[in-house]
Length: 213
Length: 339
Image 1 (cartoon, rainbow over the protein chains, first blue to last red):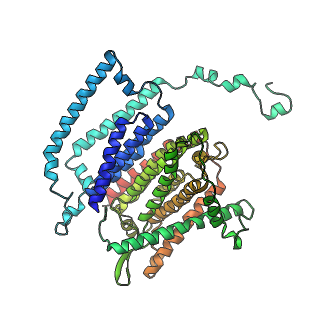
Image 2: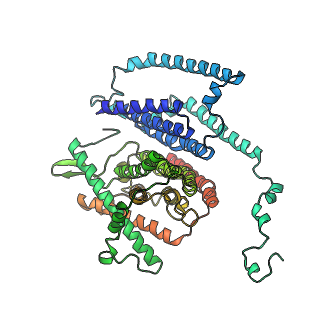
Image 3: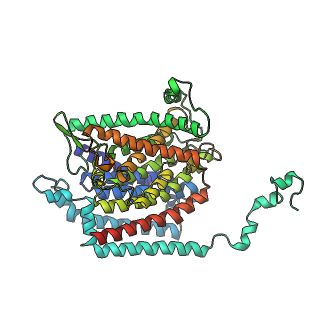
């Protein structure tokens, strides 16, 4: 059962990840990323990390990707796609090609180090220990276990990450504020309905023939 | 097998349980549908449906039969695969959420111990929020793939509404989770033996209910399908069985949210004044309380007018979210002081 689930989720994760890179339509690319994230959540469940699986879906599929879908659905696939820019000539395209190759290679090497370091060791095990003999192992992956880790061993990293997010939120507000939205003097000019129809149209004053006076 | 902590049954009991919950849960939808139409009729000083069957009791059956025998069509501008997939996502997440509502404690049925719930997950309400996050794609994809402006606007509103109110809904529960010191829903019910959480967590209960109206797209927050301005919102272009799926999912979501409110705030299967009925009464107590909460949903729909979209957004972010945060903070301080 768990082997079947693993292969379904693993194929889903790989297909989704390939789809993000290969699909030309940005909307479908985002949907592929959602499929990938949900498959990853199933893989987390198989590793008995229930909390991480739920948070993966709530935060990534349920909040971050919602914003992606929101923006892509509004903006659509306008302008040059990345693949067109990559195929073009000139300094931008060659720069992109070189940068892409460098970043991709660095990521590959990093992943290989991580996989060889811990993955080979983990292949022999069935996720976290869940045997009857070790009741303390059964708490692995529960919210209480992860909460304790976050407040003891990883307290510094946790706090630094939350400060980073706070700075990002404040920065977003400041940037949006500086752009200013609609200024007071522009507000009147931005109501075209007033230009089309005279003041008081559709009111009771118009009904008795005293519109706009 | 996934995420089971504490007690769990042999596999054949789990299959029977899944079937029973599925059957009972799906029976609730036509009842809620009929109750809503009858009650709305009464609230508006008319009879409501009274032609099909005695007292119009077979009206939901007739509705569903009509929808299922209708022609399946889709607009030429729509995107076929997503158009077919979107209603399925909606109904799948609604049904899956039903699994965590506890209808009773672990009972002895014919010598086998059976927990009267689908699964007692250690992550509790997070399971619900994860499914809620996926349910968003049912609405979003449905509206986007229809290739219609009205559908698209409805879906966009739905997207913004869901992510705005999900935060408040989650934060409203944090107070209860801190008091109960557990995420397991059966654990939360057992922690209410002395007093239901609706009393000490009244603010959390009210915030949760308001946010739930937005999360289930019910009036006065049904901006996603505001029929006065958007024709039908995200499901404008859907007909027949696909529309029935959306409709069904909406009412099932109301049932699920009623169940969650019952479990977390209204004491689940517990009765007040220390009355301990035999175990088989428990599911009926839960169903009765769920009925009361559902009635509240219908009552509000008949009473309040629909909000404007900017009012909805500013209310969610500027009123509900600070209140929910304050509630969580005050509860955290109280829990720390009293322990």
